[in-house]
Amino acid sequence: MGTIQLVSPDTESTIRIGRIIGQCLPRGSFIALEGVLGAGKTQFVKGIACGLDEGGWAGLRSPTFTLMLSYHGGRCVLHHIDFYRLNESPELPGEILEAIHSDRAIAVVEWADIWREVWPKHYIRIRFEIDEDTSKRRITIEDPNGICPAMAKDLEEFVVETADT
Image (tube, rainbow, N blue to C red):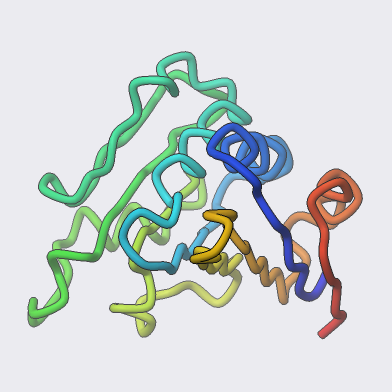
């Protein structure tokens, strides 16, 4: 698929973008999220959970202090992981490494760029930026391995720019 750039005008749209992506993700997917505090990463994960038919998606919260929260109500397990507090850690806890490399679940990691060396070979990388003037989110999605080939078409209404890599 390559790279696409989207604009999300509000929180509801960010959740909707996440839902579209969640609907196409196969088991074993690894989603690396990057962006500043408040950029919409956790709202986006709510959308992914919704796309996986996770009934408790509305109550999904950031795992900043627990490091990982797992949701079992959808079509597969969703591991929501946050590397933010692991910036100074000499190694990742074993259960987090297991979750990242599980072929039966989907792992979504906030602040994933902190531990880039543990990413699996196949991944989707999503960067969030805030437009200071409008508060809109610019979301850049890289899917170099074509994990979600139908994603670009389903996200057309949000697309600003596409590039094949």
